[in-house]
Length: 90
Image 1 (tube, rainbow, N blue to C red):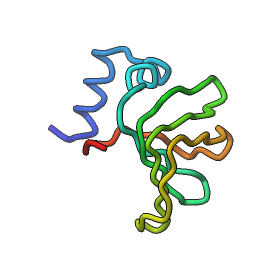
Image 2: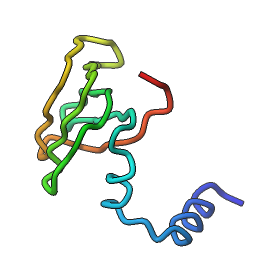
Image 3: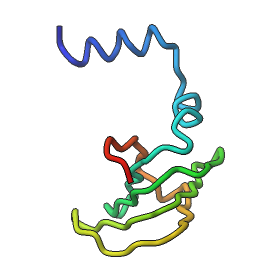
């Protein structure tokens, strides 16, 4: 069975909305990619309906290279390309 087909099946079984997904990952490690191509990795603290995102233990990556470490960071929603969960522990 193709991965795309399996994903569709899993999504249809769960009936999960994007909002449900985002609520479930609060407190978990995430990667937030901005439109500029910069990645921010850290623990998702909270977010709002505009996709403004607060991240703790934040690391900034440019072209895959660690550039800065921040305690807490606030990412403006209109700059966010996507947010995904991160497999590794911070």
